Length: 271
Ligand code: OOG
Ligand code: MG
Image (cartoon, rainbow, N blue to C red; front, top):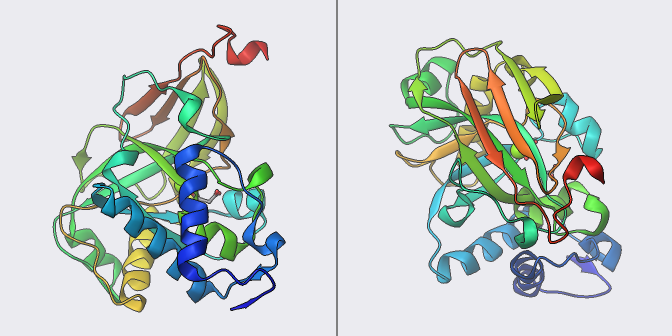
């Protein structure tokens, strides 16, 4: 690790973990003179997730990031990344969401897979399909712990890929064709992002194949019973107070979440 501010992996994990738990933005590690390799960034990620697990959180799955061109362009990076999701990140559909636990949250239209068999290493699309119990529409809430939601690839990996919340819709049969389904994300009944599942690596199933490959490279397994988020189909939208966000999909129904109005009772669309 080349760094002026010679933070060890553990110290850097503490830094991103406290920024997340206190909802307080920090300067990008790369801008603090910390130069991490991608492998070291994943070590920081693992050490920060280990802190969550030590506090009693349980890993429920993983998320894939930058699987669509829209997201890569929005954030200025061009590599697929991944990170663990824990039970503390699961947000119940219908329960009004208090945004005070976030720094500058954004929301993304996604698709989730529920695994019935473990996966790891190089697999075919057919093997990916055979390992899935069900598919659901999902909304992911990302919240970079870095100022201005700006980062290098290593910064965002160290920050567990901005993971902070997931709202899962109803599970559907894994036989439904999701290769190219319309996905519309609305805020207070106005469409804010319109896309297709095909934006996710050409077909969301490829994201599961990529997840298995990344797991294999890391020497771990995607466990049976776990969730795999395929990555956003469109760019992310800022998540504001007083908003009802709904993702409507062509074949998997819809999923929604409402945010509380802020202290002033102001509605997001009035800001
Ligand atoms: C990183 C997470 C990217 C996705 O779906 O592509 C991601 C970020 O943009 O902050 O979740
Ligand atoms: Mg995402």
